[in-house]
Amino acid sequence: MTAINSSSKKIDKTITISGSASNTYSTSVNGGIELGGDVKASISKTVGFDVTLSTSLSDETTIHNMAPHSSVTVKAYPIYDNYSFDIMSDTILGADKRIGFGSAGKVTGMYTVVTN
Image 1: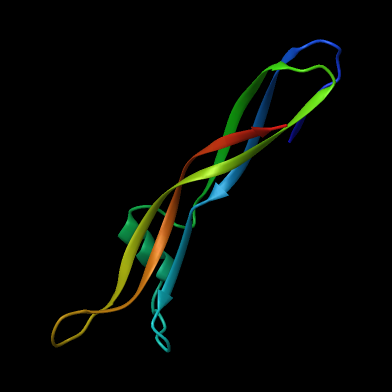
Image 2: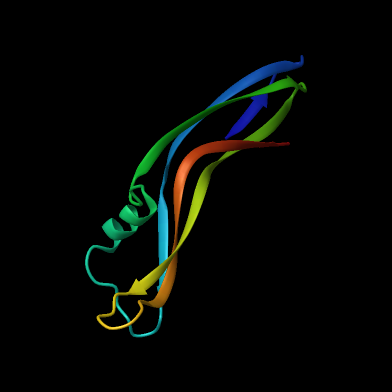
């Protein structure tokens, strides 16, 4: 989003940015192995949050003493808490075997960056 000061005086300008961001997940398993069952539900249970959830976000940023006849660009980015996990094969005899790994990100907020 671009903020423009078209006046001949310095001004303070407030910009509100709204949008949404989604939780994320990814997995990597050894070649030839397919994950069975409801993978999204299993990952959600493991990390403790719904990896398919989308969250509405809003942030207000004020640019102080904006120069006359100038503009700035304001961009917003989601903030994630990141989690890692191992994917294990449940064996009947012996110890479980690690067959892959994964990660998940939970949206916790957003931050804004202002550039000239």
